[in-house]
Length: 265
Image (cartoon, rainbow, N blue to C red):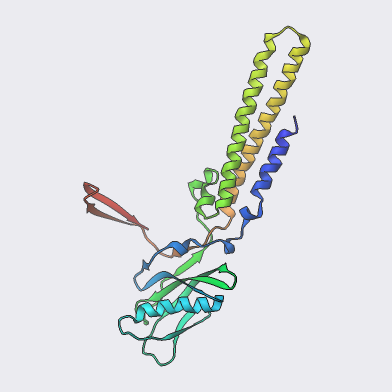
Protein backbone atom coordinates (compact mmCIF):
# COMPACT_ATOMS: atom_id res chain seq x y z
CA UNK A 1 0.00 0.00 0.00
CA UNK A 2 2.85 2.43 0.80
CA UNK A 3 4.10 2.25 -2.80
CA UNK A 4 0.79 3.48 -4.20
CA UNK A 5 1.60 7.25 -4.16
CA UNK A 6 4.92 6.66 -5.93
CA UNK A 7 3.24 4.57 -8.61
CA UNK A 8 0.55 7.21 -9.12
CA UNK A 9 3.12 10.02 -9.37
CA UNK A 10 5.09 8.03 -11.96
CA UNK A 11 1.89 7.41 -13.95
CA UNK A 12 0.91 11.08 -13.87
CA UNK A 13 4.38 12.18 -14.99
CA UNK A 14 4.24 9.64 -17.82
CA UNK A 15 0.93 11.13 -18.99
CA UNK A 16 2.40 14.64 -19.02
CA UNK A 17 5.44 13.43 -20.95
CA UNK A 18 3.49 11.73 -23.73
CA UNK A 19 4.82 12.77 -27.18
CA UNK A 20 1.45 14.24 -28.09
CA UNK A 21 1.57 16.55 -25.08
CA UNK A 22 5.09 17.75 -25.86
CA UNK A 23 4.49 18.53 -29.54
CA UNK A 24 6.83 21.04 -31.13
CA UNK A 25 5.33 24.47 -31.75
CA UNK A 26 6.19 24.23 -35.46
CA UNK A 27 3.95 21.17 -35.87
CA UNK A 28 0.94 22.78 -34.18
CA UNK A 29 -1.73 24.46 -36.25
CA UNK A 30 -1.13 28.22 -35.89
CA UNK A 31 -3.76 30.41 -34.28
CA UNK A 32 -3.65 32.86 -37.17
CA UNK A 33 -5.35 30.30 -39.46
CA UNK A 34 -8.76 31.23 -38.03
CA UNK A 35 -8.13 34.99 -38.03
CA UNK A 36 -9.88 37.24 -40.51
CA UNK A 37 -8.71 40.34 -42.32
CA UNK A 38 -6.66 42.76 -40.22
CA UNK A 39 -6.85 46.28 -41.58
CA UNK A 40 -3.74 48.27 -40.67
CA UNK A 41 -2.85 51.82 -41.68
CA UNK A 42 -0.68 50.88 -44.69
CA UNK A 43 -1.48 47.24 -45.28
CA UNK A 44 -3.83 44.31 -44.90
CA UNK A 45 -2.96 41.10 -43.08
CA UNK A 46 -5.07 38.17 -44.23
CA UNK A 47 -5.12 34.39 -44.49
CA UNK A 48 -5.46 32.56 -47.80
CA UNK A 49 -5.41 28.83 -48.48
CA UNK A 50 -5.44 26.47 -51.43
CA UNK A 51 -5.31 22.74 -52.19
CA UNK A 52 -3.03 21.09 -54.71
CA UNK A 53 -1.03 17.96 -55.40
CA UNK A 54 2.14 19.39 -53.85
CA UNK A 55 3.07 21.97 -51.25
CA UNK A 56 4.72 24.23 -53.86
CA UNK A 57 1.69 24.17 -56.16
CA UNK A 58 -0.68 24.84 -53.25
CA UNK A 59 1.51 27.72 -52.09
CA UNK A 60 1.51 29.36 -55.53
CA UNK A 61 -2.24 28.81 -55.86
CA UNK A 62 -2.88 30.48 -52.50
CA UNK A 63 -0.62 33.40 -53.43
CA UNK A 64 -2.57 33.77 -56.67
CA UNK A 65 -5.66 34.41 -54.55
CA UNK A 66 -4.05 37.52 -53.04
CA UNK A 67 -3.26 38.96 -56.44
CA UNK A 68 -6.71 38.05 -57.79
CA UNK A 69 -8.41 39.99 -55.02
CA UNK A 70 -6.46 43.09 -56.03
CA UNK A 71 -7.21 42.61 -59.74
CA UNK A 72 -11.00 42.41 -59.64
CA UNK A 73 -11.43 46.11 -60.41
CA UNK A 74 -9.50 45.94 -63.70
CA UNK A 75 -10.39 42.39 -64.71
CA UNK A 76 -6.77 41.44 -65.35
CA UNK A 77 -5.38 37.95 -64.98
CA UNK A 78 -1.77 37.55 -63.94
CA UNK A 79 0.45 34.79 -62.70
CA UNK A 80 2.40 35.01 -59.47
CA UNK A 81 5.72 33.75 -58.27
CA UNK A 82 6.69 33.08 -54.66
CA UNK A 83 10.35 33.30 -53.69
CA UNK A 84 11.93 33.92 -50.29
CA UNK A 85 8.59 34.91 -48.82
CA UNK A 86 7.88 37.60 -51.44
CA UNK A 87 4.94 37.49 -53.86
CA UNK A 88 5.59 38.98 -57.31
CA UNK A 89 3.58 39.08 -60.52
CA UNK A 90 4.86 37.46 -63.71
CA UNK A 91 4.39 38.24 -67.38
CA UNK A 92 3.06 41.31 -69.14
CA UNK A 93 0.93 43.02 -66.53
CA UNK A 94 0.40 46.54 -65.26
CA UNK A 95 -0.77 45.22 -61.91
CA UNK A 96 1.68 45.92 -59.12
CA UNK A 97 1.14 44.05 -55.89
CA UNK A 98 3.50 44.49 -52.95
CA UNK A 99 2.96 41.57 -50.61
CA UNK A 100 4.97 39.29 -48.37
CA UNK A 101 4.32 35.98 -46.67
CA UNK A 102 4.58 36.27 -42.90
CA UNK A 103 4.04 32.60 -42.13
CA UNK A 104 3.01 29.35 -43.76
CA UNK A 105 1.37 26.15 -42.60
CA UNK A 106 0.87 23.00 -44.70
CA UNK A 107 -1.22 19.97 -43.90
CA UNK A 108 -1.66 16.74 -45.82
CA UNK A 109 -5.33 16.14 -46.58
CA UNK A 110 -4.79 12.74 -48.19
CA UNK A 111 -2.11 10.88 -50.06
CA UNK A 112 -0.78 13.28 -52.70
CA UNK A 113 -3.09 16.13 -51.65
CA UNK A 114 -1.93 19.14 -49.64
CA UNK A 115 -3.51 22.29 -48.27
CA UNK A 116 -1.30 25.31 -47.65
CA UNK A 117 -2.30 28.29 -45.51
CA UNK A 118 -0.49 31.57 -46.05
CA UNK A 119 -0.49 34.55 -43.71
CA UNK A 120 0.07 37.43 -46.10
CA UNK A 121 0.65 41.14 -45.57
CA UNK A 122 -0.29 43.23 -48.61
CA UNK A 123 0.38 46.95 -48.98
CA UNK A 124 -2.59 49.15 -49.82
CA UNK A 125 -0.27 51.03 -52.18
CA UNK A 126 3.04 49.68 -53.55
CA UNK A 127 4.92 52.75 -52.34
CA UNK A 128 3.83 52.38 -48.72
CA UNK A 129 6.04 50.74 -46.09
CA UNK A 130 5.16 47.51 -44.33
CA UNK A 131 4.17 47.79 -40.67
CA UNK A 132 6.21 45.63 -38.35
CA UNK A 133 4.00 42.55 -38.16
CA UNK A 134 5.59 39.38 -36.83
CA UNK A 135 4.57 35.84 -36.02
CA UNK A 136 5.66 34.40 -32.69
CA UNK A 137 5.15 31.28 -30.60
CA UNK A 138 6.11 33.02 -27.36
CA UNK A 139 3.34 34.20 -25.06
CA UNK A 140 3.58 36.96 -22.44
CA UNK A 141 3.13 35.98 -18.80
CA UNK A 142 -0.50 35.75 -17.76
CA UNK A 143 -2.37 35.03 -14.54
CA UNK A 144 -3.77 31.98 -16.35
CA UNK A 145 -0.47 30.26 -15.50
CA UNK A 146 -1.65 29.94 -11.88
CA UNK A 147 -4.62 27.78 -12.90
CA UNK A 148 -3.39 24.34 -14.01
CA UNK A 149 -3.84 23.79 -17.74
CA UNK A 150 -5.44 27.15 -18.54
CA UNK A 151 -2.37 28.81 -20.07
CA UNK A 152 -1.56 25.67 -22.06
CA UNK A 153 -5.08 25.71 -23.52
CA UNK A 154 -4.70 29.41 -24.33
CA UNK A 155 -1.43 28.69 -26.11
CA UNK A 156 -3.10 26.08 -28.29
CA UNK A 157 -1.45 23.11 -26.55
CA UNK A 158 -4.72 21.34 -25.78
CA UNK A 159 -3.19 17.94 -25.01
CA UNK A 160 -0.83 19.39 -22.43
CA UNK A 161 -3.54 21.57 -20.92
CA UNK A 162 -5.97 18.69 -20.51
CA UNK A 163 -3.17 16.54 -19.05
CA UNK A 164 -2.35 19.16 -16.40
CA UNK A 165 -6.01 19.60 -15.49
CA UNK A 166 -6.64 15.84 -15.26
CA UNK A 167 -3.45 15.26 -13.27
CA UNK A 168 -4.20 18.00 -10.75
CA UNK A 169 -7.80 16.82 -10.36
CA UNK A 170 -6.58 13.24 -9.82
CA UNK A 171 -4.13 14.40 -7.15
CA UNK A 172 -6.76 16.46 -5.33
CA UNK A 173 -9.19 13.54 -5.53
CA UNK A 174 -6.50 11.26 -4.11
CA UNK A 175 -5.87 13.67 -1.23
CA UNK A 176 -9.56 13.79 -0.34
CA UNK A 177 -10.04 10.02 -0.58
CA UNK A 178 -6.89 9.19 1.39
CA UNK A 179 -7.72 11.70 4.12
CA UNK A 180 -11.26 10.32 4.42
CA UNK A 181 -9.94 6.77 4.87
CA UNK A 182 -7.29 7.93 7.33
CA UNK A 183 -9.91 9.78 9.41
CA UNK A 184 -12.18 6.73 9.31
CA UNK A 185 -9.49 4.46 10.75
CA UNK A 186 -8.61 7.06 13.39
CA UNK A 187 -12.28 7.09 14.48
CA UNK A 188 -12.28 3.29 14.66
CA UNK A 189 -9.35 3.12 17.08
CA UNK A 190 -11.32 4.00 20.26
CA UNK A 191 -14.23 1.77 19.18
CA UNK A 192 -12.53 -1.40 20.44
CA UNK A 193 -10.44 -2.56 23.40
CA UNK A 194 -8.77 -5.30 21.37
CA UNK A 195 -5.07 -4.36 21.28
CA UNK A 196 -4.43 -6.18 17.98
CA UNK A 197 -7.42 -4.52 16.33
CA UNK A 198 -6.40 -1.09 17.61
CA UNK A 199 -2.88 -1.64 16.27
CA UNK A 200 -4.34 -2.63 12.89
CA UNK A 201 -6.48 0.51 12.78
CA UNK A 202 -3.50 2.65 13.78
CA UNK A 203 -1.32 1.10 11.09
CA UNK A 204 -3.99 1.61 8.42
CA UNK A 205 -4.49 5.23 9.52
CA UNK A 206 -0.74 5.86 9.23
CA UNK A 207 -0.62 4.19 5.81
CA UNK A 208 -3.42 6.33 4.42
CA UNK A 209 -1.84 9.37 6.01
CA UNK A 210 1.35 8.63 4.07
CA UNK A 211 -0.66 8.13 0.87
CA UNK A 212 -2.39 11.47 1.46
CA UNK A 213 1.00 13.15 1.92
CA UNK A 214 2.19 11.52 -1.30
CA UNK A 215 -0.74 12.97 -3.20
CA UNK A 216 -0.10 16.40 -1.64
CA UNK A 217 3.51 16.26 -2.80
CA UNK A 218 2.41 15.16 -6.27
CA UNK A 219 -0.18 17.95 -6.51
CA UNK A 220 2.41 20.54 -5.46
CA UNK A 221 4.97 19.20 -7.97
CA UNK A 222 2.45 19.22 -10.82
CA UNK A 223 1.31 22.74 -9.90
CA UNK A 224 4.87 24.09 -9.97
CA UNK A 225 5.57 22.18 -13.19
CA UNK A 226 2.43 23.72 -14.70
CA UNK A 227 3.66 27.25 -13.96
CA UNK A 228 7.16 26.59 -15.32
CA UNK A 229 5.73 24.98 -18.46
CA UNK A 230 3.27 27.84 -19.00
CA UNK A 231 6.07 30.42 -18.82
CA UNK A 232 8.80 28.64 -20.79
CA UNK A 233 7.09 26.45 -23.41
CA UNK A 234 6.28 27.53 -26.96
CA UNK A 235 2.69 27.61 -28.13
CA UNK A 236 0.79 27.88 -31.39
CA UNK A 237 2.04 30.71 -33.60
CA UNK A 238 0.01 33.93 -33.60
CA UNK A 239 0.24 37.39 -35.16
CA UNK A 240 1.84 40.21 -33.22
CA UNK A 241 1.67 43.80 -34.41
CA UNK A 242 4.43 45.92 -32.87
CA UNK A 243 3.34 49.23 -31.46
CA UNK A 244 -0.28 48.18 -31.06
CA UNK A 245 -2.21 50.39 -28.68
CA UNK A 246 -5.31 49.93 -26.58
CA UNK A 247 -8.29 51.75 -28.04
CA UNK A 248 -11.58 52.10 -26.16
CA UNK A 249 -14.42 53.33 -28.33
CA UNK A 250 -17.91 54.00 -26.88
CA UNK A 251 -20.87 53.15 -29.11
CA UNK A 252 -24.63 52.63 -28.86
CA UNK A 253 -26.55 49.51 -29.82
CA UNK A 254 -30.21 48.50 -29.34
CA UNK A 255 -29.06 45.47 -27.32
CA UNK A 256 -27.05 47.57 -24.88
CA UNK A 257 -29.99 49.86 -24.02
CA UNK A 258 -27.52 52.70 -23.89
CA UNK A 259 -23.78 53.06 -24.36
CA UNK A 260 -21.41 50.11 -24.68
CA UNK A 261 -17.62 50.07 -24.71
CA UNK A 262 -15.61 48.45 -27.47
CA UNK A 263 -12.00 47.61 -26.57
CA UNK A 264 -9.45 46.96 -29.31
CA UNK A 265 -5.81 46.18 -28.66
